[in-house]
Amino acid sequence: MSPESQNLPAMEDNDMRYFPRWEVSNRVSYYLEGENRPHHGETRDISCAGACISGVQEILPHQKIKVTIELSNHVKIDLKANVLWVKTEGDRPVMGLTFYDTPDTTQDLILKHAFELDRDRFVRHLFKGWENVGS
Image (cartoon, rainbow, N blue to C red; front, side, top):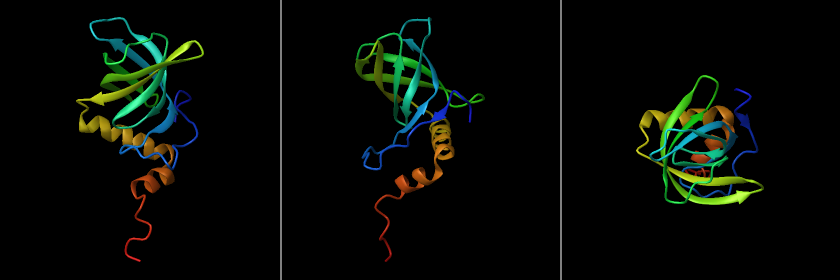
């Protein structure tokens, strides 16, 4: 795992999202729709369906952006996203994103990355509620 991708405290067991998010800090470049100039930030968490990123350029909710996330030194993924919400923490904007038109191969890379970060937590989340099945 690269220094850019640190495993922070694992996702909450009570997180009820269909696609769980894993708390990670990865470098991010993002482009506002219609712009060619990148803005930079980092992920706070990520899943197959979305992410929370902190950045330097505040974006308005409902904007479409293109995002490149460095999962490791050798793996970058390109995603299309809608900005769901924006808030300011300190002097930095924090944005909730939902991905769209994400290829299966990219979703697989995100899941593989999450599995490598915390295998036990990943498996527990996938099989949550199955503890007593077949007993």
